[in-house]
Image 1 (cartoon, rainbow, N blue to C red):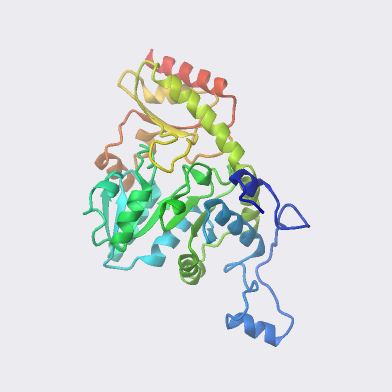
Image 2: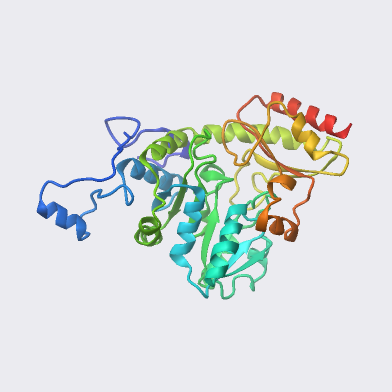
Length: 381
């Protein structure tokens, strides 16, 4: 079969005759026909399912499709994006190691690093994302580079191929959260990054009804995660959630193009809105390997716009955390990053108080634009 586009890989049922949707195998354990089969499985001579905390056919179907999408050798699903992050990092980092992390990292990843890993004896250093490609000292002596490109909230980007080359030369494992871009817009493994992870609750699901995570990498790295953190931390992906995620993957490419079209409309027009100081919304070719734009961006307002009044004036946009679903959301940074160590990170890394993150959903683009601009106008009054 010739090389297929990502659209076809995700949408087509290529497993052969039978159900086009993988069935939900809702069971906790699997049994064996005889002693020999049981012994073969327990000694690792056979890979048949044994217990859903370790593996399940419905979960495996999602993992296989996700590995194809990211062009990786293997994948492993988790019960949340944070389980994917913690399960990955804890599989490769030990006390005394250093993690080189991007500034403006996902807030709960920051909390995990500061509240759990640092007291455990892991050093974490934070750097502007551009420094990973430009400053050789950032990676020197690090065990793991934890990346986002674009970064959370500020959506800054970096040349991942260059970062990967520098990291390989210094023996540093590279991990990237690719939730913003999805494999439709960016495929980091093809750029040399070692491990890609997603909060699958976002665009992968696309329906705001699932909390999950997934990690894709070469086979030996996934095997290490499966042998250590997946079974022992127990944050397994459930069969029903895996079923929903496979459903979401089928339409991912189509949805991402719709999100991108609405984001393009906003980016083109926001510069003409009074009170807008900056728009953070990287698009195709901002850096090598980034082939498009997702529906997540941030708008920085000057002091003439009252952010609470803007938020309260929205009619279609809803206030909430998360993103990537069919609904449009507004996330004011001043309130969203106000608590605990995340507040310290926001101050340290310079998140403007007038910043609003928008997740542009699948509603009519002109309806969303009209809603947003009327709220901005009211907030300037």
